Image (cartoon, rainbow, N blue to C red; front, side):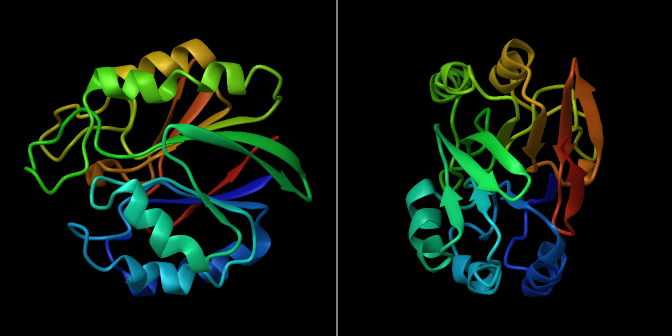
Length: 210
């Protein structure tokens, strides 16, 4: 299964057009949040991305809420928006079970505009994934914020990820974790046990899931 992963478009229409081009040869598209800037401009990229006919799964970033993203993505017929929920995606290469949680985790220093959650809230939104994944062979976690001490190092080297997300990954061991949020670690990958963790970034990264 070929998967195109991206995050943090922040209204970049040129990046969105390149993603549309790349999506022609994939089975699944994953967008890990921050389509907007401070809740402004969601349509800038989603109107372009809606040209993608392949199955897509999106989560909100900290720059837009779940409701805002769900409403803006209504014209993208092949896209599903998740936040504390899961879906099973059927592709030509088989089925995959995807759980998604958006927003900034833990709470960011950016102020009231940021769509943030604390670690306890995040744990609650992640709780359902273990049962949801119980009978699936292919499992993907899509989160805007990275698991702590993975691909979450800011420009000063400080780790900015989530302990709750890391605990979930270590407990449930999804095949793939797609995140974004921390710009200085875009396109970097690491592993937590058997899970591949990718901070995708806006240019798009192709992942092969067996």
